[in-house]
Image (tube, rainbow, N blue to C red; front, side, top):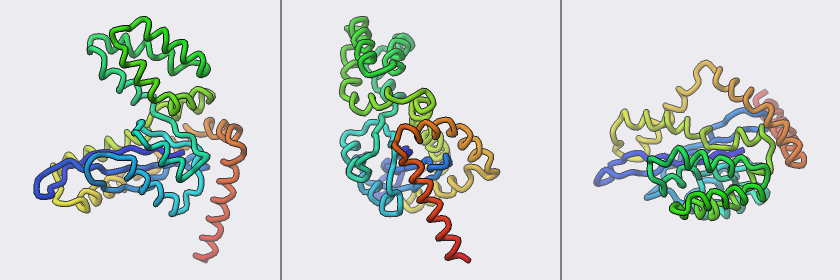
Length: 258
């Protein structure tokens, strides 16, 4: 599994401006989290830059990804499938709900969110379409909300084919957003940075301080055990093959070190 997202930090380049920092984390075949890297980009977040990031990740040895969870950036699924043709691209459900609420009055947010829940908890795609139609019938004044889901439909529906253990872990990009929250606190404490290298160094130091005891790493692994069993069955042995490849790589590294 790969989760990707971007945060913005303030960098002084003639004048202070927001610059995106691209973040990618992975869940390994053994169920452990690995932070794959931090990349500073120019301008706004874009699929073209993400493609260069994913190309680097693949060239560094990530030969396969079962799924990639993202926030629905236009053009990103094509970039992902260029790197890993078999990867399932899943849009974060929480991002979909947030995008929907942009079109609703704040006083209706709670009810709109509750009425969207049957859509993303549907048993299959046909059921989800029926529930989205029911939502549209109830909220004709918010006709843009069903359109948000329709535009993201091809990246939303993979989620519906999975059992509950997998749905629980791919429902949201919280896996990376909790990390980004730590990065934002570290960046905000500095105000703005003189250049992008200073920003990356600050975020790198925040990364080193994430889990000094190692208990968080073990809790993460425990949370993913049930989902890994489901992935093993659903993805035609690709997860087992990844474990074998990882073991062979580890043995080679040990032999070289010995």
